[in-house]
Each structure stands twice: as C-alpha cells, then as structure tokens.
Length: 495
Image (cartoon, rainbow, N blue to C red; front, side, top):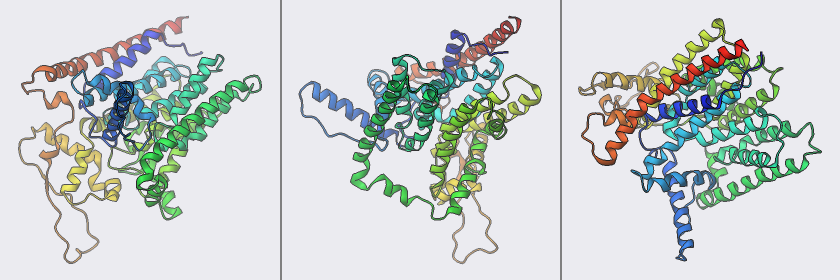
C-alpha cells in the first residue's frame, strides 16, 4: 500500500513539538560554544557597516569569520531581535533549536513518502532524542549545514520533478547554501552534483536552461564563500596551511581514522547515535528500490568521512564526532525506507537502540560540552589526543559521573582521580595523577534547572516561565502528533 501524505496540521504539530521540547532544556545562550562568538561579532559588524552606509557615516572595517559571510547572514535577524528582547545571545540560542526542528521535519516529510506513519514518526523521534541532534540543538554548531544538506536532498530527490522556475531557483539556492554554510562544505560538492544529475538526467535537453541556472547559482555561492574566507585566513596563513598542520602522516592512520569515525568507543558515531548501527543493514537493503536516496546518503557520509579522516584526530572537544552531524538525518532516512512497516521483530531492537541513544544524548544535552575540557585542564591531561581517544575521559562516562553527583545534591565533595594504567612500571620522576572535585562540573547547563529556586525578577523571570511552559507544552504537542498519526494510519487502512 502506498504511504499516505501527512496532513499539514500533523507536520506543524511535529515541528512545534520538537522545537518546544528542545527549548525547555536550553542554556539560554550559545556564545561560549566554538566559533559562535566570532560569527556574532561578524554579524554585528555587518549591521554596523550597513547602518553607517545608510546614514552616510564613516564605514568601519569588516570583521570576518572563519566560515565566510554566508552563515553569518542567518544570525543577523536573531541578533537584531536580541537588541529588544533579553539579549542577543539569548535570542540567537533559538536558531540552532529551530534549525534542528526544521531538519527533523524535513526528515519526517521524506519518510512519509517511503514509510508508514508509525515508522516515520518512530524514526523521526528517535533521531530527535536518540542521536547527537539533541545536544547540538544547544551547542549550535553544524545545525545550519545539516538542515540545508537534507533540504537539498529532499528537493532534488524526495519531491520528484522540478517543473517551475521558482522551485528550480530555490533548489539552486539550497544546494549553494549546503556547501557554503561551513568551510568543510566544499567536500559535499559531489553530493550536489549528484542531486543535479539525478534531477535533470532524463530530460536535461528540454530543461537545460534550468540546469544551467542551478549550476551557476551554486558556483556563485562557492565564489562568494571562497572570497569571504580568504579575508579571514590569509592574514595569518591560508586555511590549507592550517589543515596541513593537522593532517595525518601515514595512510594507515587514515584507515584507522575511517574505522574509528564510526566504531571508536570514545568518539564513534555509533556510540553517539546507536540507531545508526541499523544503517549497515538498511543501505544494502534499499539499494535497488531507492537507489537515488542511497547514493545521496553515501555521498554525504562517505565524503565527510574522507575529509575528517585526513586529520590527526577526527573529533575535537565538542560532544561526539561533530563533523558527522550532517550524516545523521540521511542515514536515519535509509533506516526508515528499509523497514517501512511496523514489525515488532524489526522495530523492537531498533527501539532498544533508540532508548540507549536517548540516555546518551540526554547527558550531552544536560551538560555543557566544555565541562569535560575544563576538568581535563584541571587534571593536567588536556591534550587533543586524550580528548579524542582516552577511555578514562570518555565524555559519556564523565557526564554520567557528574549526573550522579548532581542527583545527590552537588553539595558534598566528590573527589575523582583520572588514573591511567602504567605498563608495567612507573617512569622515574612521574608526578602523581591530580584529583579533581566533580562538584565543580555537576551543574547542568539548562537555564530552567540552574535558576529553578533562585528569586529572579524582570526579563529573567519571564525567561524562566517560558522554559517552564515549554517543558509542559512540548510533550503534549508530541503526544498530539502520535495520536494524529494513529488516526491517520487507521483511516488509510480502512480506505
């Protein structure tokens, strides 16, 4: 039986349910994360330049960011609104939450074209709360790129033939954004080329004008992105030189990085998104029936894996293997397409992996990723290799240890010594391992939990009440989505 398209109200309920549920645990700021402060500064400088030009005043110098000016343009509306509501950082924290909710909505819409309502909703919710997508809704990195990569695939493959010019232009813009919202996006150009080929391969002669315009739009985006990034990198050395300093020195290290990118016990994708283990069986299963979707997923996953495997370490101090964030939604889509009908023999094990992922992702959403880095610095063990591969500092285990301290009240001293095993004798003159107090790192990042019992006033009290409303409204909205999906499935079965 052909899958029934979802009702528009169901889709909107899902979008709002995920958005509001995510928002309930928000830290109310993203400025401390990665390069976001750098992009905020660049966005504010763009606004200052425009304001000076408009008022015929001396124009200040531009402040460039490492990923170019294109991703900064998405920050400007939030930063502008933040001048009137609480703070710029607070309003900007809504952006990654919204991007992730939109990403999951696109995943749901595409799943509904290849799977039943129950499977579509199950996979979407497991991707939402059982993978890295949840923590990164607060971290704020990777979310824009992942959204537009998935949207490009949906427009190029999932929505069928592009007929009218406005939709063709939209497709070109989305593809251009997919490869320019991060400097690493250039590695995804083969994915974009594959989407354009798949869309126009059968009748490209009659639509060669559309094909040319789409290609030119993507090229224009790449040119703007290249020039913008040069202004940031060239004064201190090119980005290529920086990349060479971090590159592997042996092909064997590249191979081990490829394998570790998925299976590492400290930074592997399958650890931080356990349901994606099923993609190992799903992709061969759908190769014949959904070949275009499968190729899209393999291009995204494969080329991003190749890029980061050329680095000395495939992940940094941020939660999980963050560069593979872009592959989570496409791989989840393949899982739904492989088993499109609810079957307990298939979906109970899948749900078990999803439940494990929820526990892991909850810890990543509960704690600021920089807490572990601070603890490693306090313990004198903050090397990039230890951050990426030391089992003693496994970030899931570290956050679980901090969570246990928080459950106990975070009041009494909780000493922990990150010891390593020497083989087989202690080298002469080795200093003892430092002991750290886990009370320093047990406080959650959620604004609601941090300030629950504090006497807040003014705008901070309003923020607290908003998050309290979200923690109640979010699950209710998702419950409504589940109910509507059940009703839609029953109606489609009877028709």
